[in-house]
Length: 163
Image (cartoon, rainbow, N blue to C red; front, side, top):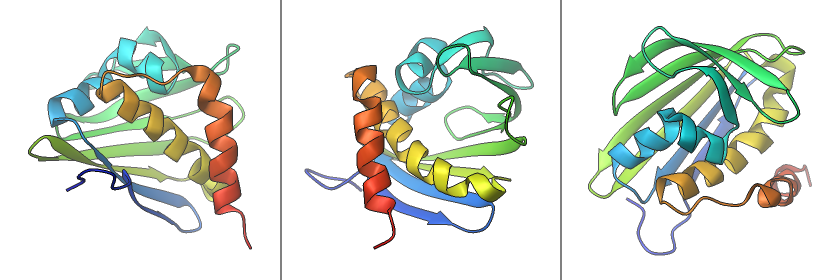
C-alpha cells in the first residue's frame, strides 16, 4: 500500500454515466470510516449534515454551502466495509454513491463509485478527488481549510482538461 510520498489517488475511470475512483488513505480503516460517516467529520470534507444520520436505512441531508442541499437515503451500511446512498440535488437527476473500504494495516483502500451521472460525469470527475483530499485530511486528524477547496478544484480541472 501507500508508503512515503506515493500519491493517494490510485485511479479515476469514467464511462457515459459512472465515475470510479480508487484512493489510499494512510489511516486505519476505523478512522477512514469515521471520516466517511460521522457528521462532524463529514463537515470537514463534504458539507454540513443538517438532518438525519448516516446509518442503515436512514435519510440525511447535507448542505454544500449557501443552503444547496443534497438529499440522501442509505441503501447499504456495512460498518468498516461498505456504504451506499442515493444522491439528489434539487437541480440534478438522482444518482447513487457507493463506497467500499479495505484495510491494509495502517492504511485503507477506498473505492468510490458514483453511478447514474450521464452528462454530469466530468463535473463529478473533477469534484470527487477534491473532496477525497479533504476526506483524507479529516481521517488523518488534520482537516484542510475550506478556503483551499476551489484552488485545489481548479488544479484538478486543469489536470483533467483535454490537451
